[in-house]
Length: 421
Image (cartoon, rainbow, N blue to C red; front, side, top):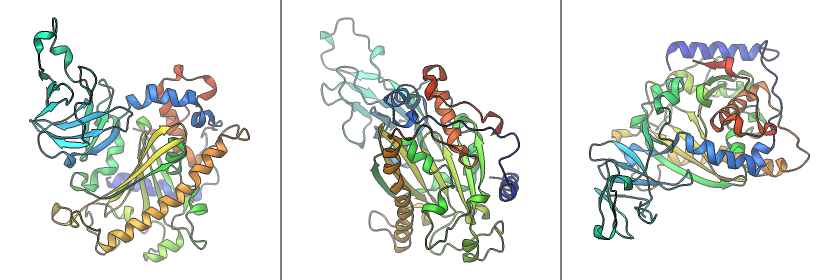
């Protein structure tokens, strides 16, 4: 996040405040088909073509710090085994023994220099998934050891976060994230540690949850208290990146500017965060705006100088989503200052504040899903402020393959000229 990007965001924000209409030539969005959120057809397309071809966050590198440490990841609908090899590299295998299909490991996490299936003791090594032992080899006719290795999935690390992709031919993770990585550079992500996590089941499609965090058009309506909102959606500056990623930087409202002694919406300064350890390299803009980044398909991150939550949306079925949020932050002396005990008071207050915001968003999600299933809704209107939502839907269609999608369920690709390189 260099000064040139910050200056661009400031310019974009000033433009947003003063515009009286969308930019000249900005496309008119047709309605997003409701069936993308409620139909069995579209859910099946996502499950077959999108989720198996997309990078998703699975864990942190410190979750498996030593050779042989592993964690089982099931959020893509299949059991994957993420393991640190003897060479220190992190790899991903399917947690499926190539004998009779039993899971190779059954614990959610553990450590072993050999992966031994409990059913018949077929044994695999941790660096390449090679089969290295099985009982009674004499009873197998023309047994092919090489053909019985554990199947692999793509695996890579960005900023200490471990990502997996079931597609072995996937675009490399760094290339996939692309220019969006610039937003994370000041945050020293490798040194962050988990503070707390929450997980709830929400009765709505996963896209309903994601869309709630891709715009601030709703903010003053559901996040105001006594008529006061902390953000001013009129100045929200958005950027669209390749592969469906995006950013949104929203200025403080006048009331919130006064609270932190700002003289104007762009009087950006570092704010005293009291007992929270902060990241010195993070620019003042982050302290005096809501600075959020989305990584396609299911990650929303509202960045902060003393850490940030990562919001994740995992589909359970077409009308049910698991919504996780995991807060990461710098800590003194590079370790969990609170260990396995209670959070300190300042973190308990922050947890309650953020959980309350999430609760306000979730209040709308189940009613929206129910309402979408009504014949009264013939299409989902989308405006200029909601263009990050359209951007996400375009990318969904690109990954699925437009030719696979029934014409009545497609969105037209309109935002190509607005994607930053």
